Length: 236
Length: 361
Image (tube, rainbow over all chains, first blue to last red; front, top):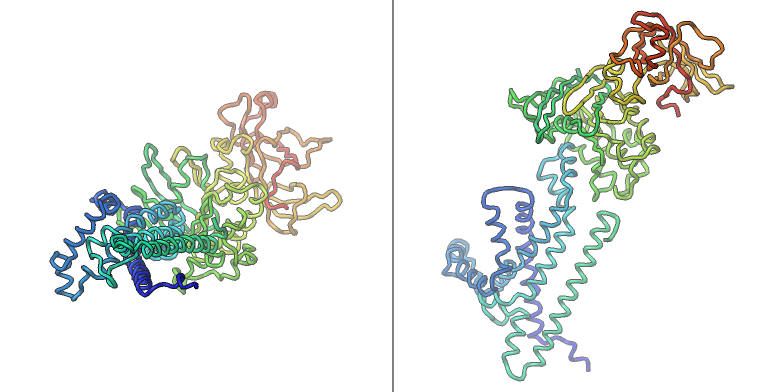
């Protein structure tokens, strides 16, 4: 009688794919976001405002436009996409990896924003102290800066992860809506709502989506607290 | 010569300029807030680049604009203890302490971690994190952290400024032990005269970004033109004296200095130990003959060597008591009536209870 609690094969496929896409997008997103946030927070260089605008562009562009731009550059006919295909045999257009890239691009500004805030909050005088003790820049970054901004990185990661789970416009434009390959939760819900009589199925996916997001938020909260507590002896 | 500093740097409208040489021991950079003391130590540490000049420690050149030498802070081997300790908040005390150790070449590691932990009394704190420490504990850990990098010079930028009086007295003995036991030269920034008179071997006085005077503590403090830099209350001289006996009944200690014997309230140090006493100019009175029937215990024969330019209402006198410099402030009227002139032999009277004994507790 609890059959309704079990996921159908289709639902399992969609959930697993969504998580896979979101996690890969995070793996692409975070290292770059940390690097760019550090660059923007700490250095002055020509073209800095341009880079800043570029980072935040996906936040203001219609997602469809972002998706289409991705298709133009990373599609098999696009300059980068053709090069990737000819040199490495890598194709991302209309693949789940492409979905992850689309999700990463959309989540990038959120991750950079959160991480940059935490870098700005680091007391640079503490880094100065480390340099008088003999540490070079790279070592200071690894042993002082990075641990101190870890809470910010976690916040950025969770924002980007949530964005990836919910990403729709750029994904459907860039990699289409292919079942088992690029059909993530929002895309599956969208498809079901287009078919008469599938309202119940759509509703089930919707509830799954809500639960997933909720779990992600709680996990982030717990992680955040653990990290702060371990590092500073208090959980706030 | 442990340290040579000759630096110049423009900061906004102010030009910071300092030139001094420090012997082994503690060189105190003294001046009011904003006199440029911190900028000077930042230049020595490598955190601030001088516009021109030269900095050398034990003959090793850290900065020389003419030879285009500018070692980065991490290569200077200059330990720095900041006013706000700047411990790494995410690392336990143990890892804070050991942070700089790996960067010192093995053969140049002259400090033993256990000995430093012992010397600073921080053994019970090793597994705590900095936010859980008191202000005094934090500064002790910061001192240990700087020392474990085996520095060839130690900079201390008002390390006690953020602490209350009790915490200050908790740290000061440790700094004296560093000076006496580790022999690492120390440049100590302060605007507290108490710290100067207690710690300094060399004194460098800064005013408005410029060097006002530099030299051995006794010499600088004995100068009338500088005496009031510390403020009239603190002006005076610092004398090194030896404990020659204790009077248990009256809780007094007898000290011997070149000028003669001094009696001061009890000092908790064994016989033959050296003590520094700070004799305030306001507490020295002048008599023409050895007085009788007076409560003042300390009477030192001395000669007047200099009289300050202004004589009203105070006259500033520099005395020489068998080689020991003393400064006395008397009223201009007294100076007039006693006919105090340069070269005159007098008796300096010092109230025992007014003598500051450092490290007496």
